[in-house]
Every structure is written in C-alpha cells, then in structure tokens.
Image (cartoon, rainbow, N blue to C red; front, side, top):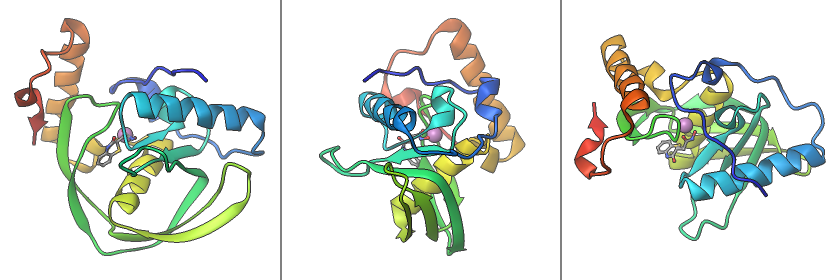
Length: 178
Ligand code: GNR
Ligand code: NI
C-alpha cells in the first residue's frame, strides 16, 4: 500500500475529465487500496482518482464510524436524480474550506465493483451527496463550481495565498464559511 499525494485546488490537473476504466485488473485493485489508505489517513469520507492525479473513473467512499466499510464505484453513472438537499461540503483538495452546496437527495447509481462486477443501487442522503461530489471530480469539477463567481474567486485566492505562505495555524476559526 502507498500513501498518495492529494492535489490541491487550483491545481489544473483537477480540471481533467477522467476516461472510463476499460478493465478492472490488478492495477485498479492496487489503486483502490492506495486510495483507501490515502482517504483514511487524510481523513476523508470519499476520494476520487482525479484527486490523486490518476485519470481513471474510480471513486471510493466510506461513511462508517469505524472506517471499515469501503464502497468502491468504478465508472459510476448517476441517473434518476430527484429532490434537493443542502449540506456544508468540504473537500480534501480545498483544505479548510466549507460551503453549503445543494445536491440531489435521491439518485440511482450503476457502477462496477472492485471485482469488475456491475451493480446498480438507489442511494440517498450523505451517500448520494458524496457520490455526486466524487463524480464531479471525475468530470474535472470541484464543489466551488456550484457557488457564485464571487465566492469561488474568494476561495481560489485564499488557497493560492496559502500555497505561497503556508496554511494558517489550525484553529477552527480559520475555516472559511461562505
Ligand atoms: O471528506 C469529505 N467530506 C465531505 C463532506 C461533505 C460533502 C462531501 C465530502 S467529500 C470529502 C472528501 C473529498 O474531497 N472527496 O472528494
Ligand atoms: Ni472532494
């Protein structure tokens, strides 16, 4: 297993649209293991391959308290999106930033599991939110793309400044709440 480097916005590599995985082979399995180690260490509840500079449609999510229920979505396709729900989203590629984002509350997703077997499931709530956030990453989008240009620019400038000056001391008050 290997800890991977997470790209920080506005890294232009976060803007690439990832192509579909053609075959779920040992390489993909290793990628999933490395992504899981990286997500658990961060810590985060989800991670898209785009964030670790791998251009492949691979997403992992673990919403469990014990951090032992990894869900793998290869080539995820969202359909039947319904309802809307607003939550404070964060992103490992935008450290220290949270903002309220509106997503669909209920979706269907079909994907391949880590064995390459197709499955389809209806998901709701935080899992639905997280999946939409991760599929956005695979399409080269980040959550600030859902905000006004003013808010997006403020966040981008803050992250550019922090990349130069180093992050602020880790006090709770440093979180930029839009
Ligand atoms: O760890 C994460 N938390 C989170 C909270 C609300 C909505 C989405 C997320 S995903 C994020 C990890 C991440 O950046 N995934 O791309
Ligand atoms: Ni993210």
